[in-house]
Image 1 (cartoon, rainbow, N blue to C red):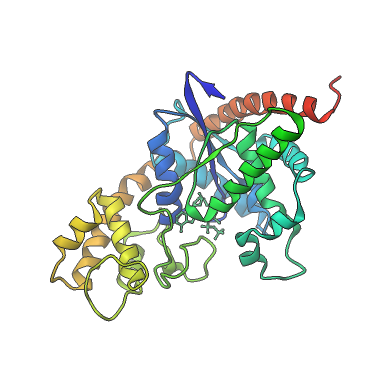
Image 2: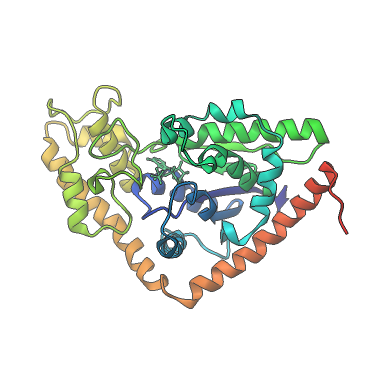
Length: 332
Ligand code: AQP
Protein backbone atom coordinates (compact mmCIF):
# COMPACT_ATOMS: atom_id res chain seq x y z
CA UNK A 1 0.00 0.00 0.00
CA UNK A 2 1.35 3.45 -0.73
CA UNK A 3 0.86 7.02 0.31
CA UNK A 4 1.63 9.78 -2.23
CA UNK A 5 3.01 6.99 -4.42
CA UNK A 6 5.79 6.43 -1.92
CA UNK A 7 6.44 2.84 -0.80
CA UNK A 8 5.73 2.04 2.83
CA UNK A 9 8.61 1.25 5.16
CA UNK A 10 8.45 -0.13 8.71
CA UNK A 11 11.16 -0.78 11.26
CA UNK A 12 11.80 -0.59 14.98
CA UNK A 13 14.37 -0.69 17.75
CA UNK A 14 13.94 -2.19 21.22
CA UNK A 15 14.31 0.13 24.21
CA UNK A 16 16.62 -2.33 25.94
CA UNK A 17 19.47 0.08 26.55
CA UNK A 18 21.36 2.78 24.78
CA UNK A 19 21.50 2.46 21.04
CA UNK A 20 24.96 1.40 19.86
CA UNK A 21 26.89 1.78 16.64
CA UNK A 22 25.49 -1.54 15.35
CA UNK A 23 21.89 -0.36 15.77
CA UNK A 24 22.84 2.99 14.27
CA UNK A 25 24.70 1.69 11.22
CA UNK A 26 22.51 -1.40 10.63
CA UNK A 27 19.17 0.31 11.16
CA UNK A 28 18.84 3.97 12.18
CA UNK A 29 21.10 5.43 9.53
CA UNK A 30 19.02 3.63 6.91
CA UNK A 31 15.83 4.99 8.52
CA UNK A 32 17.12 8.53 7.97
CA UNK A 33 18.31 7.82 4.43
CA UNK A 34 14.87 6.46 3.51
CA UNK A 35 12.70 9.18 5.00
CA UNK A 36 12.59 11.44 1.93
CA UNK A 37 11.50 8.85 -0.59
CA UNK A 38 9.24 6.54 1.43
CA UNK A 39 6.19 6.68 3.66
CA UNK A 40 7.92 5.42 6.78
CA UNK A 41 6.74 4.18 10.16
CA UNK A 42 9.45 3.88 12.82
CA UNK A 43 8.55 2.31 16.09
CA UNK A 44 10.11 1.92 19.54
CA UNK A 45 9.26 -1.72 20.09
CA UNK A 46 8.72 -1.84 23.84
CA UNK A 47 6.51 -4.95 23.62
CA UNK A 48 9.45 -6.84 22.15
CA UNK A 49 11.71 -5.69 24.94
CA UNK A 50 9.64 -7.45 27.63
CA UNK A 51 10.41 -10.84 26.08
CA UNK A 52 13.26 -10.69 28.58
CA UNK A 53 12.88 -9.16 32.08
CA UNK A 54 12.91 -5.35 32.22
CA UNK A 55 12.84 -2.93 35.12
CA UNK A 56 9.50 -1.07 34.59
CA UNK A 57 10.82 2.34 35.69
CA UNK A 58 13.87 2.01 33.52
CA UNK A 59 11.83 0.78 30.55
CA UNK A 60 9.84 4.03 30.56
CA UNK A 61 13.07 6.01 30.53
CA UNK A 62 14.80 3.97 27.81
CA UNK A 63 11.66 4.19 25.65
CA UNK A 64 11.94 7.98 25.74
CA UNK A 65 15.73 7.77 25.29
CA UNK A 66 15.31 5.79 22.08
CA UNK A 67 12.58 8.14 20.84
CA UNK A 68 14.87 11.12 21.46
CA UNK A 69 17.73 9.32 19.69
CA UNK A 70 15.52 8.72 16.65
CA UNK A 71 15.19 12.49 16.37
CA UNK A 72 18.80 13.15 17.31
CA UNK A 73 20.16 11.02 14.44
CA UNK A 74 18.07 13.03 12.00
CA UNK A 75 14.59 11.57 11.72
CA UNK A 76 12.10 14.29 10.90
CA UNK A 77 8.59 13.79 12.34
CA UNK A 78 7.17 15.71 9.38
CA UNK A 79 8.46 12.95 7.12
CA UNK A 80 8.43 9.87 9.34
CA UNK A 81 5.78 8.54 11.72
CA UNK A 82 7.53 7.90 15.04
CA UNK A 83 5.62 6.03 17.75
CA UNK A 84 5.77 3.55 20.63
CA UNK A 85 4.51 0.03 19.85
CA UNK A 86 2.44 -0.51 23.03
CA UNK A 87 0.39 2.62 22.30
CA UNK A 88 -1.09 0.88 19.23
CA UNK A 89 -2.87 -2.25 20.55
CA UNK A 90 -3.44 -3.62 17.04
CA UNK A 91 0.14 -4.99 17.14
CA UNK A 92 -0.89 -7.51 19.81
CA UNK A 93 -4.20 -8.20 18.09
CA UNK A 94 -2.65 -9.08 14.74
CA UNK A 95 0.12 -11.00 16.45
CA UNK A 96 -2.44 -13.43 17.90
CA UNK A 97 -4.09 -14.00 14.53
CA UNK A 98 -0.68 -14.70 12.98
CA UNK A 99 0.15 -17.02 15.91
CA UNK A 100 -2.86 -19.09 14.94
CA UNK A 101 -1.56 -19.28 11.37
CA UNK A 102 2.00 -20.30 12.21
CA UNK A 103 3.74 -23.56 13.09
CA UNK A 104 5.84 -24.35 16.14
CA UNK A 105 8.37 -26.01 13.80
CA UNK A 106 9.10 -22.83 11.88
CA UNK A 107 9.48 -20.82 15.10
CA UNK A 108 11.85 -23.45 16.54
CA UNK A 109 14.17 -22.85 13.60
CA UNK A 110 14.71 -19.17 14.41
CA UNK A 111 18.40 -18.80 15.27
CA UNK A 112 17.82 -15.79 17.55
CA UNK A 113 15.48 -17.91 19.72
CA UNK A 114 18.02 -20.74 19.82
CA UNK A 115 20.82 -18.30 20.80
CA UNK A 116 18.85 -16.47 23.47
CA UNK A 117 16.99 -19.44 25.00
CA UNK A 118 20.06 -21.74 24.97
CA UNK A 119 17.71 -24.72 24.97
CA UNK A 120 16.35 -23.88 28.43
CA UNK A 121 12.81 -25.08 29.28
CA UNK A 122 12.31 -21.93 31.32
CA UNK A 123 13.02 -19.58 28.39
CA UNK A 124 10.16 -17.05 28.24
CA UNK A 125 7.39 -18.01 25.77
CA UNK A 126 7.57 -14.45 24.43
CA UNK A 127 11.10 -15.12 23.17
CA UNK A 128 9.67 -18.00 21.12
CA UNK A 129 6.74 -16.02 19.68
CA UNK A 130 8.73 -12.78 19.23
CA UNK A 131 9.00 -13.24 15.41
CA UNK A 132 5.19 -13.34 15.17
CA UNK A 133 4.90 -9.98 16.92
CA UNK A 134 7.58 -8.68 14.56
CA UNK A 135 5.62 -10.01 11.57
CA UNK A 136 2.50 -8.26 12.91
CA UNK A 137 4.45 -4.99 13.26
CA UNK A 138 5.44 -5.13 9.61
CA UNK A 139 2.20 -6.47 8.06
CA UNK A 140 0.03 -4.03 9.99
CA UNK A 141 1.49 -1.12 8.00
CA UNK A 142 1.51 -2.79 4.55
CA UNK A 143 5.26 -2.24 4.58
CA UNK A 144 7.06 -3.09 1.34
CA UNK A 145 10.54 -2.56 2.80
CA UNK A 146 11.97 -3.36 6.21
CA UNK A 147 15.38 -1.77 6.89
CA UNK A 148 17.12 -3.90 9.55
CA UNK A 149 20.54 -5.35 10.31
CA UNK A 150 21.23 -8.79 8.82
CA UNK A 151 20.63 -10.53 12.18
CA UNK A 152 16.92 -9.94 11.47
CA UNK A 153 16.93 -11.37 7.94
CA UNK A 154 15.51 -14.73 9.04
CA UNK A 155 12.59 -13.00 10.80
CA UNK A 156 11.78 -11.09 7.60
CA UNK A 157 11.78 -14.38 5.67
CA UNK A 158 9.29 -15.78 8.20
CA UNK A 159 7.14 -12.65 7.85
CA UNK A 160 7.07 -13.18 4.09
CA UNK A 161 6.07 -16.83 4.54
CA UNK A 162 3.27 -15.89 6.94
CA UNK A 163 1.94 -13.16 4.62
CA UNK A 164 1.96 -15.49 1.60
CA UNK A 165 0.31 -18.30 3.61
CA UNK A 166 -2.40 -15.98 4.91
CA UNK A 167 -3.02 -14.50 1.44
CA UNK A 168 -3.34 -18.00 -0.03
CA UNK A 169 -5.73 -19.12 2.69
CA UNK A 170 -7.98 -16.06 2.99
CA UNK A 171 -7.39 -14.11 -0.23
CA UNK A 172 -5.18 -11.09 -0.84
CA UNK A 173 -4.75 -9.31 2.50
CA UNK A 174 -1.12 -8.48 3.20
CA UNK A 175 1.65 -6.80 1.25
CA UNK A 176 4.58 -9.24 1.14
CA UNK A 177 7.57 -7.28 2.50
CA UNK A 178 11.23 -7.32 1.45
CA UNK A 179 14.34 -7.18 3.63
CA UNK A 180 16.28 -3.97 3.04
CA UNK A 181 19.91 -4.28 3.97
CA UNK A 182 23.07 -2.30 3.33
CA UNK A 183 26.39 -3.21 1.74
CA UNK A 184 28.66 -1.89 4.46
CA UNK A 185 27.78 -2.36 8.13
CA UNK A 186 24.85 -4.80 8.04
CA UNK A 187 26.52 -6.55 10.99
CA UNK A 188 28.78 -4.51 13.25
CA UNK A 189 30.80 -6.77 15.52
CA UNK A 190 31.63 -6.52 19.22
CA UNK A 191 34.84 -4.57 19.84
CA UNK A 192 36.14 -7.05 22.41
CA UNK A 193 35.24 -10.12 20.35
CA UNK A 194 34.78 -9.45 16.63
CA UNK A 195 33.28 -12.90 16.07
CA UNK A 196 30.11 -11.81 17.92
CA UNK A 197 27.69 -9.04 16.92
CA UNK A 198 27.76 -5.78 18.85
CA UNK A 199 24.85 -5.95 21.29
CA UNK A 200 23.12 -3.77 23.89
CA UNK A 201 22.93 -6.58 26.41
CA UNK A 202 26.57 -7.76 26.36
CA UNK A 203 28.14 -7.51 29.81
CA UNK A 204 31.36 -5.74 28.78
CA UNK A 205 30.58 -2.08 28.09
CA UNK A 206 33.74 -1.86 25.97
CA UNK A 207 32.25 -4.40 23.57
CA UNK A 208 30.12 -1.60 22.15
CA UNK A 209 30.02 2.13 21.59
CA UNK A 210 26.69 3.64 22.52
CA UNK A 211 25.53 6.81 20.80
CA UNK A 212 25.51 8.57 24.18
CA UNK A 213 28.99 7.48 25.29
CA UNK A 214 31.37 10.17 26.60
CA UNK A 215 34.40 10.86 24.36
CA UNK A 216 36.73 9.31 26.96
CA UNK A 217 34.69 6.08 26.99
CA UNK A 218 34.73 5.94 23.17
CA UNK A 219 38.50 6.39 23.27
CA UNK A 220 38.95 3.58 25.78
CA UNK A 221 36.66 1.17 23.89
CA UNK A 222 38.36 1.75 20.53
CA UNK A 223 41.93 1.79 21.82
CA UNK A 224 41.45 -1.52 23.66
CA UNK A 225 39.44 -3.17 20.86
CA UNK A 226 40.60 -6.63 19.82
CA UNK A 227 42.57 -6.80 16.56
CA UNK A 228 45.33 -9.24 15.63
CA UNK A 229 49.07 -9.51 15.84
CA UNK A 230 50.18 -8.99 12.23
CA UNK A 231 49.69 -5.23 12.43
CA UNK A 232 48.69 -4.78 8.77
CA UNK A 233 45.57 -2.73 7.99
CA UNK A 234 43.66 -4.86 5.53
CA UNK A 235 39.98 -5.77 5.09
CA UNK A 236 39.48 -9.50 5.55
CA UNK A 237 36.48 -10.48 7.65
CA UNK A 238 37.54 -14.12 8.07
CA UNK A 239 41.22 -13.66 8.81
CA UNK A 240 41.14 -10.19 10.38
CA UNK A 241 37.63 -9.63 11.82
CA UNK A 242 38.70 -6.98 14.36
CA UNK A 243 40.44 -4.55 12.02
CA UNK A 244 37.80 -5.21 9.33
CA UNK A 245 35.09 -4.20 11.78
CA UNK A 246 36.97 -0.99 12.64
CA UNK A 247 37.45 -0.27 8.93
CA UNK A 248 33.70 -0.63 8.42
CA UNK A 249 32.96 1.85 11.19
CA UNK A 250 35.59 4.23 9.79
CA UNK A 251 34.04 3.96 6.32
CA UNK A 252 30.48 4.62 7.51
CA UNK A 253 31.48 7.67 9.56
CA UNK A 254 33.67 9.25 6.86
CA UNK A 255 31.82 8.13 3.73
CA UNK A 256 35.18 6.90 2.36
CA UNK A 257 35.48 3.57 0.54
CA UNK A 258 37.21 0.82 2.53
CA UNK A 259 39.83 0.32 -0.22
CA UNK A 260 40.72 4.02 -0.07
CA UNK A 261 41.10 3.90 3.71
CA UNK A 262 43.33 0.83 3.45
CA UNK A 263 45.49 2.64 0.87
CA UNK A 264 45.65 5.75 3.08
CA UNK A 265 46.97 3.71 6.04
CA UNK A 266 49.47 1.59 4.12
CA UNK A 267 52.55 1.25 6.31
CA UNK A 268 50.79 2.69 9.40
CA UNK A 269 50.23 0.67 12.54
CA UNK A 270 46.96 -0.05 14.34
CA UNK A 271 47.77 2.59 17.00
CA UNK A 272 47.54 5.55 14.62
CA UNK A 273 44.49 4.10 12.86
CA UNK A 274 42.66 3.62 16.16
CA UNK A 275 43.58 7.14 17.35
CA UNK A 276 42.16 8.62 14.14
CA UNK A 277 39.03 6.48 14.46
CA UNK A 278 38.47 7.81 18.00
CA UNK A 279 38.46 11.38 16.61
CA UNK A 280 36.17 10.42 13.74
CA UNK A 281 33.62 8.60 15.91
CA UNK A 282 33.60 11.31 18.60
CA UNK A 283 33.17 13.94 15.88
CA UNK A 284 30.21 12.01 14.45
CA UNK A 285 28.56 11.50 17.84
CA UNK A 286 28.91 15.09 19.00
CA UNK A 287 25.96 16.58 17.02
CA UNK A 288 23.78 13.55 17.84
CA UNK A 289 24.44 13.99 21.56
CA UNK A 290 23.77 17.72 21.55
CA UNK A 291 20.43 17.29 19.69
CA UNK A 292 19.55 14.47 22.11
CA UNK A 293 20.15 16.73 25.14
CA UNK A 294 17.99 19.43 23.59
CA UNK A 295 14.99 17.15 22.96
CA UNK A 296 15.09 14.36 25.58
CA UNK A 297 13.06 16.08 28.30
CA UNK A 298 10.99 18.34 26.04
CA UNK A 299 7.23 18.58 25.61
CA UNK A 300 7.93 18.42 21.90
CA UNK A 301 9.09 14.80 22.20
CA UNK A 302 5.82 13.74 23.87
CA UNK A 303 3.80 15.62 21.26
CA UNK A 304 5.69 13.90 18.42
CA UNK A 305 4.99 10.48 19.99
CA UNK A 306 1.30 11.29 20.50
CA UNK A 307 0.95 12.40 16.89
CA UNK A 308 2.79 9.25 15.84
CA UNK A 309 0.37 7.05 17.80
CA UNK A 310 -2.56 8.74 16.10
CA UNK A 311 -1.20 8.25 12.59
CA UNK A 312 -0.03 4.69 13.25
CA UNK A 313 -3.35 3.70 14.85
CA UNK A 314 -5.29 4.95 11.83
CA UNK A 315 -3.13 2.91 9.44
CA UNK A 316 -3.18 -0.15 11.71
CA UNK A 317 -6.95 -0.07 12.14
CA UNK A 318 -7.46 -0.12 8.36
CA UNK A 319 -5.46 -3.35 8.12
CA UNK A 320 -7.19 -4.91 11.15
CA UNK A 321 -10.63 -4.29 9.64
CA UNK A 322 -9.52 -6.13 6.52
CA UNK A 323 -7.95 -8.98 8.50
CA UNK A 324 -10.90 -9.47 10.88
CA UNK A 325 -13.31 -9.58 7.97
CA UNK A 326 -11.14 -12.25 6.31
CA UNK A 327 -10.90 -14.51 9.37
CA UNK A 328 -14.61 -14.21 10.11
CA UNK A 329 -14.77 -11.96 13.17
CA UNK A 330 -18.01 -9.99 13.34
CA UNK A 331 -18.07 -6.22 13.52
CA UNK A 332 -20.91 -4.67 15.56
N1 AQP B 1 25.60 -5.47 15.61
C1 AQP B 1 24.69 -5.02 14.76
N2 AQP B 1 25.05 -4.66 13.50
C2 AQP B 1 24.13 -4.17 12.62
N3 AQP B 1 22.81 -4.04 12.93
C3 AQP B 1 22.43 -4.38 14.17
N4 AQP B 1 21.24 -4.36 14.81
C4 AQP B 1 21.37 -4.82 16.07
N5 AQP B 1 22.64 -5.15 16.31
C5 AQP B 1 23.32 -4.90 15.15
C6 AQP B 1 20.02 -3.88 14.19
O1 AQP B 1 19.50 -2.85 15.03
C7 AQP B 1 18.09 -2.87 14.93
C8 AQP B 1 17.48 -2.80 16.29
O2 AQP B 1 17.85 -3.92 17.05
P1 AQP B 1 16.97 -4.29 18.31
O3 AQP B 1 17.05 -3.23 19.32
O4 AQP B 1 15.61 -4.62 17.88
O5 AQP B 1 17.54 -5.59 18.91
P2 AQP B 1 18.70 -6.51 18.67
O6 AQP B 1 18.86 -6.86 17.24
O7 AQP B 1 18.50 -7.66 19.56
O8 AQP B 1 19.87 -5.56 19.13
P3 AQP B 1 20.86 -5.76 20.27
O9 AQP B 1 21.62 -4.54 20.37
O10 AQP B 1 21.65 -6.99 20.07
O11 AQP B 1 19.98 -5.89 21.56
P4 AQP B 1 19.94 -6.99 22.67
O12 AQP B 1 21.34 -7.09 23.19
O13 AQP B 1 18.97 -6.43 23.66
O14 AQP B 1 19.48 -8.26 22.04
C9 AQP B 1 17.70 -4.11 14.14
O15 AQP B 1 17.40 -3.72 12.82
C10 AQP B 1 18.93 -4.94 14.18
O16 AQP B 1 19.05 -5.76 13.04
